[in-house]
Length: 198
Image (cartoon, rainbow, N blue to C red; front, side, top):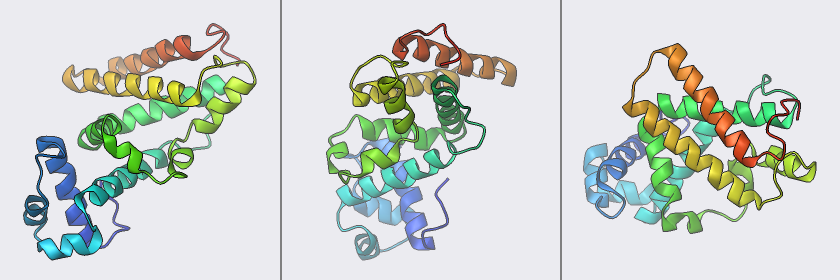
């Protein structure tokens, strides 16, 4: 799951941190345990990440980049509804393929560490931010704060992922549930949810 664009020691640190943060929580995971699990010295960990807080934020940004990479494609569709469906279903499928990473994203988003993200990061981290803006300005999506809409979509994503991970289904059933959960989200955020040409 962790990209090989980082060097091997950073990769080991990020993989160990991901596993331990999800298992033990942020506060329950000392950096010494991460270093031990990664097979590196404490000093090596701090060479790459000055503090545990910096490691947590770096891991979030690293994983979020992996997820948003799966949401870039030429088959996203032309309408706001089609693009929102593509982004949602792509993110959910990625989450089902990478459950530990997806749980880390959920853990991070409900933590104070969100305040440590670079100011410009929010606008870069959501593949669907632009289409939500477009949907609001064109009257297709309800005129609510963009941050609220993104948070509502994210909450549904995490809930749907958790359900599908704990209630295994065959591929056709899983795909039907993925599409149905998006339909529910769309009815919640769209001004005219029955119009599929939006």
